Image (cartoon, rainbow, N blue to C red):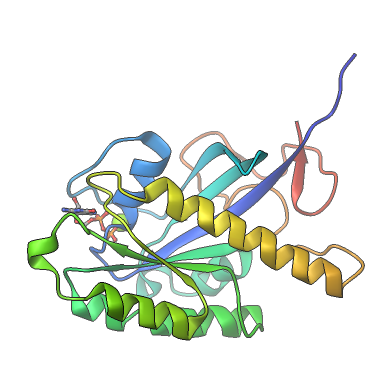
Length: 215
Ligand SMILES: Nc1nc2c(ncn2[C@@H]2O[C@H](COP(=O)(O)OP(=O)(O)O)[C@@H](O)[C@H]2O)c(=O)[nH]1
Ligand SMILES: [Mg+2]
């Protein structure tokens, strides 16, 4: 007897200035190793099946390039994403100062006053090169109404936790939205970002609703 299982997909975008460790965080999370100096030539998405708070989740993670490199696709990717890891490096003050702009863009594109975002202060293994204090990060996160996570892609510190927390934020956000809207709507829909490394063509699964795929 076959029993269909419904699997919720979450599209997560990792954004932030160049060099903060977006690719390293994504690869550490999805593949479990650290890459020094890896640069993708195109935007790539990777998928990982996880159990978060006893619920199975398929994470479709987009490791982004810069807004300039995307051009018109930037807004499209923002629109498709269910949540964002906003990354800066604790060793680069400019990257910290630059996180406000994409957050504003996210809220604008989503037409929301808040949205699932986790702020990630990466490279916490480089304490001796720290330029941004943990208090400053906390203050920013509080101002944005987001969680802050200090991570190290190199030493795999808080990497899983950052992605899991983002999924929790998305679930919380969706619950609040469902409570205010009787019909579930999900702007991103099923499928992948469409440029994943593996064989993940869009629309190859049946759907139960706009946010699930049937296994
Ligand atoms: N020490 C340390 N280096 C890191 C960490 N994360 C990334 N890096 C290094 O920082 C550089 C830029 O990382 P990358 O992932 O390519 O940054 P991206 O441009 O944001 O994707 C590379 O040399 C990485 O090896 C980290 O947590 N600790
Ligand atoms: Mg990168």
